[in-house]
Length: 438
Image 1 (tube, rainbow, N blue to C red):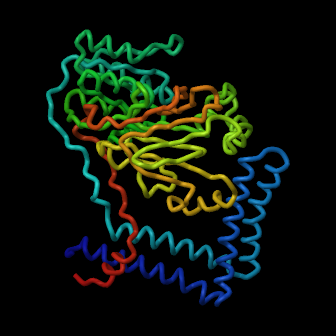
Image 2 (cartoon, helix red, strand yellow):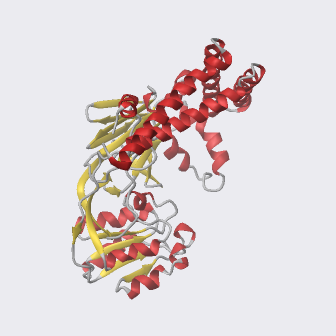
Image 3 (cartoon, helix red, strand yellow):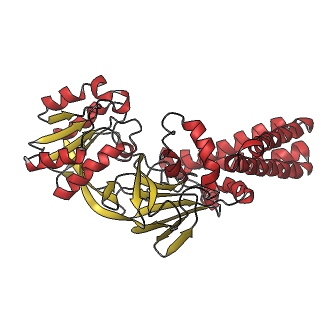
């Protein structure tokens, strides 16, 4: 590795290694061998706080109050001990050193080049594009950015949904195709995107995403501009096509993910819309302890997960570097589903979740098909599911499958793109890079 970039990376690696060494040496210099005991006490405090939060979430009344008090008291005790020992400043500096080491280490290793972007295909612009727009989506982005008028200038037929009279967007899309539409587009949330994308895939015509939703997770993973949704309309005149996967649950398409368990059960409550926090606090103890809702069993790729509190099945897996698994997807064309299950039955397992993906309570794998079943005694023969953020019920067993390359997505040729994931910190590689010479 030569040149300016090579030198920069070597010095970043040296900075990372130096910061790690300093983070280890500083406590020993400042507090001697007692720093080991203080560190153990700090880790124990974190574990106690995690256990306290588990008890607070899984109980009500006096137990919840005592558990919250325990979680707070554990952290207060840790801070008080560090202050009494005169090493609080050491803790702050050590945390800053570790943060610097991680930042410098990722800069030294560069971006992870292991994931290739979907191939782009140049195709002629559509002649009869049909676009469905939700004027309420994203707090009114359709009107704020003049999306209807701009799309019509570019030759698109636009249908504005009427919030007062709900319409079947899939039926609208099928009717448009029957009348000759050669592209279907949506300016709305991911749930609406998924319904119309399913119709586009069914008829083999391109689909266009306009990032007018609130979160725009699908648009994010497609590399579209989420700040200005009007730029997505460039796909009508200067666009390229990508071939990406779709997920399917039963007979319904999803573009992001489907969730089972705690989240899906709670949002089904009629009270959730009007009082989200209190509804969660009231229902979560029964959901987490399996006194409410379905007891799930998940099968896929030779794996079986029994009685998880929550399961997320995604259209391609989320980044493994994200501790919660709810960040970004590096690929949309890998042809597999990502599966993330959370199974925590006691305070010890709750504390272990601090280990992130290495925790035994957090199980992740991939499969091309996932079957989720529920015990016969739970709410009849149906299970609650969140599909791209929409709360639905499905008869069990529920089958989720990946549909590789099922969707032709038309995107602007010039777009922000998807940022590559940072490299995983490999301290052996960093050491070798730091010791290397140009």
